[in-house]
Image (cartoon, rainbow, N blue to C red; front, side, top):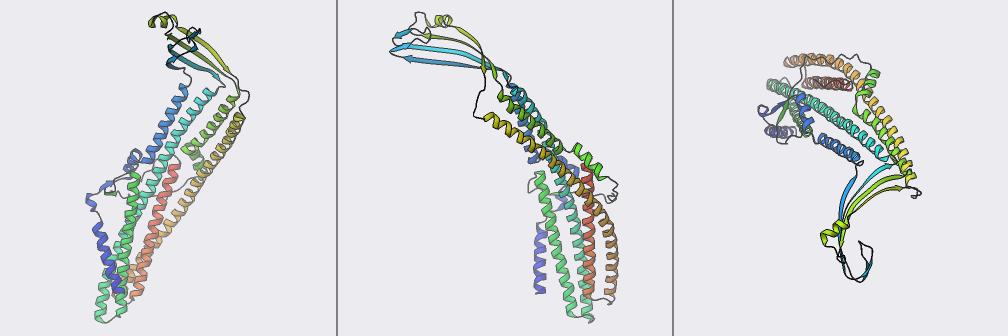
Length: 442
């Protein structure tokens, strides 16, 4: 069974290798390039930009409601028998052909201040859409940062796994030599082979993880699935262990700069304007109405063009609409608006709580990751020294294959723990910088 497992593993490894793209033909992406490209091409950001465009249209529409309207009408009528002449209002018994044309206009002079409040509300919504678009951009930026670091982590994990395979293959050669010399049993030799197969399987898993993160990054960048990319590795000289920050100060600063907080505050103002609009329905509406018109009837002695001159009329009127009872529709609208204000206030409080949780979580994780990084680095160094000694003992026949495998696995786990602590430390360090309004740079 062990030999069968080894053969299957080797075949799968060759298949995976054959599917990999030559890195020399892949485009190299830095984090800055990823962020810039995503801000210009990500469809979620484009959708948020369209919401802003719609808010601009709605604001312009609200302002235009102050203007008078203007429309024309025309009608052609035939009547027979006893009827009223639509021009002279005389009673006639005849066939009548009549034509009427007019220009009509109306303008609202006062509507419970609803027009002004609607314009103010739409202006607030326009300002809010700016912050909502910025929030969307921030979410994409943080997603790319996290994904970028996951790719770097996975890439280093592949290197570790490949190094383990190379070391295991050398151990298999040593085990074969010792088996031929009769210093170890066959079971020790097959155990070394099994460890090599296990390490090759780990390479396959690590490479698959790497490719999955690459796919996720290409999705965020809206790249073609067939496009091959590589990302730039980090400068190993950068120190991410220094953390002398006050989480309360970070939180207070985040409240002042994060767009979701500003959007939630504007949301309360929008709801308050909604209440003003609803209350405006209690007040009367005053409108100015005007029209220009003329007409022609077939029973009149004047010809067509003369009648249009003779029958030309002008009208100017004021219209006052006083609400008395509308089946409690206005009352219900006011109550709903008051409820919306309370909901907006709760949403603002929830947003601030969420920001505090983000800052608190990032801060605690940053502190923990720093401590883990220091411990993991020491553990990795010790495990490496122990593994090097184990290899020498194994060469001299003073160590069993099982003990060597255990030592290698311990070293591998120490390397992985160090990688995890390293990239978590970088991630949370960058998050804390981001919440203070600083740019993300690796």
